[in-house]
Image (cartoon, rainbow over all chains, first blue to last red; front, top):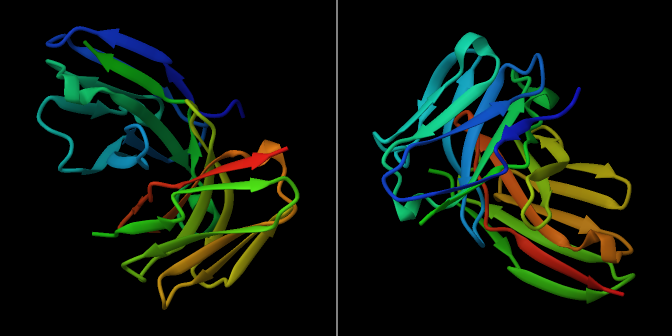
Length: 116
Length: 110
């Protein structure tokens, strides 16, 4: 159990470029979440997967955002045509799911995105 | 939509004090509630998870209580230490996701 891994840790990009982040959850964790956090605020829900199925997307997730979790393992979050307002920490989290203590959430260290 | 409020937003105390962090949420139909700790520039670490059927949960110097009907939870930290300095966030769970408050930023002075 190596924890939740996110790559890269930091990403600096120019406005209009596309970026992709990767998250490797704890193995055997069925649920995977993406959150976004800006300075001084708590994380905001973006989307979550149950195995490979994306079950919910927040209204915060515009058409420029897409997330995948092929084969129910790692996940990617892509942002197309980045805007300065996309600058934030993008956090990935995973859990076993299924209720009770299995809902305990484990977070990665996040990817800090800066759009210039 | 679940709204979460944490009071106070910031707290500075001398080492050794006992302290209480407060969390309130608007929708009481939650399945559980977690308290997290976040160090600057880092991800979140789960401290305690209280299931909806429980009233409190303890881990070391931390004790979290839950009053679901009134939409409140508290995190009690005993004998605070400088290493406890961090932001503490509560997150009730319903509608298949965790909702976060803005946190309480704690500074424990040596």
